[in-house]
Length: 405
Image (tube, rainbow, N blue to C red):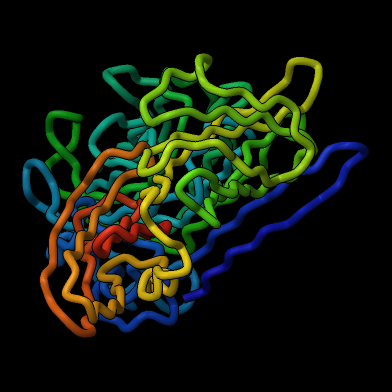
């Protein structure tokens, strides 16, 4: 498994940009076993925790020694194999390149798509149909953007170079450009492989193809104002909270208010020059929304990123939160189950709540025990992203960020 994650920082003149790269050639996986079962960190099934959607590692044929993925189906609607790769981000600007080697068996077809966001089955950004007669079609939402040919029964390289800033999508087969187009859905978050060659799309209902050496990279537009990341909260009391974030820019705008406020009507802190800020004079036991954006000057700003936190109850003596001060989630990040070790020697009521990044309650559960217990949090059915875990023991309240991969 040649996997590469690379973050390169380059300075050109007065601009800074980053390149993120992912690559997997499947060579260190065990042949005959599922890809997702061996690497659930990077790959997933379309339907979470669905083993029959996983694809098996094969050494029968490969573009680079010695393994590849093999997809096969003779069902009219394709499947059941259906695996996805969530990109490191949902890309809406900059230059994105997807590269892979494919062998479509003679007399059969192949298919992959890219989804608009990190959530499957909402918007298909692009569909790539490779029919059994050697025709390749790029389309989406009933619009055919490009029709070309590909070599059947042999390995070939497929590359898509997408300038998201200019909305220019270009297809290359074996380094030869086959044309370019503008896409009505100019955003990508997921790569999906699915064996289908439907007669409804001009195929013969038989799909069989190998995939090897999958990689992508993304270069943000150096002229853009980059979004801040990792909006975190710490030192939360009944009336204050510290906020921090990560950014390569030099100035930021901050807006905050009680949960659910409409942006533009909140408390604005313009052009702060540090990546941290302390909110004061807050109400106790109250949920607050916080938004941060980069301010690059000359009316150029990034998108807003947001998160939420809850202040403590006024009656809470912070020095007495003996059990919750050490409240930690492990493992974190996680893609399965995370745990909390809790000690409750006073027989107090315990409540565990999971909220999404917008403050919406996903689940809540009460516990009644005296002593120490390891509480599990199952995240198998949660979409990838950031969540807030709120733990209450009696009148004591604390929360931590949970990252679901």
